[in-house]
Length: 458
Image (cartoon, rainbow, N blue to C red; front, side, top):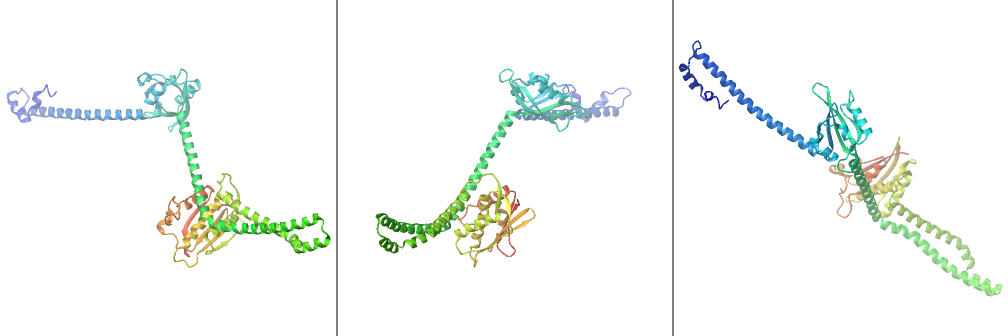
């Protein structure tokens, strides 16, 4: 229009100057000027609309390119069908699965992609549903795999969602799915990662337990030294008694007379040996059994705990933990153990003992700091409905306010380098959670820190 209408390019003043020379009978000059101005306005509007149209075309092309890039990037297969099951849109994942291009698929029947009759019946039921769910429904379809041998199918878990027009009428269906093999592979990878994480957790738990056990070596050595020394002393006495009895029996077998045997019996103190033998044997057995009990307790504590949960007498676990902590920390501590009524919980005795030893050891370390005249611990249990509550309190400086929210974080510790791993409380927290309980920390109103362990009662 601009190229064929040179008059429109002239300014209005020039058009007004031409009017006296091109006048038409019956039409005055002002009318012509109004017509010219109106033509200018219409032309300007046309140019503006053309610019707007060009911008809309660019935006539409960008939107189409964006949608195409999204569809191409989808790893899930996509099929958009009309209300009769004819394919209107696909994506690269579907084309790769069925071995056909997008142009080949458009306009064909969706049922041609399915490998068996049951899949076709399930798809037909979804497409023919008069009132489909707007949130979609999940079905399993077997698609023909065009990249493999003839007749080979690929199971796909698909979600079928109705496509609704502006009028509210259903105009088609959208199928979005993922091959089941990929889902199974992802599930197996997730399960393998979970098992690996569980194994790492068990190893970490065991490592922390060994660290706790290492801190008790001195106490354990002292604990074992007493019964072993007792057994060794009895064995040496039995060896001496054995020599005396051997001499006396040799004289008996040699046929010495009664008077000589009587004199030998007195000199070897055979009567005393016979009277002392039962107590020596009993003491030796007692010492050996005590040693075996100590070793057995250490083995139970150091062994990898099984997954099985059994009834556990919590008071006995606490007493064992106190016993071992006393041996490791020495006599410079006062421990007030207030055993409540018998409390039974379901769990692992070894794991619960580790939790209590961690709590007691941390309390001992906190109370042994500077400024504490006599380190003291208070341990108590109580039954509160369906819960068994154990409190461990010390008379140390307590926990700083900024540290209260972090005491159970892995690798967090306020101890000097080399004195703690920062894993004891974190692992204890995880063990208690696995037992269905809770472990909390606070500063006691009377001073010091207090840890509260709550476990479901059996």
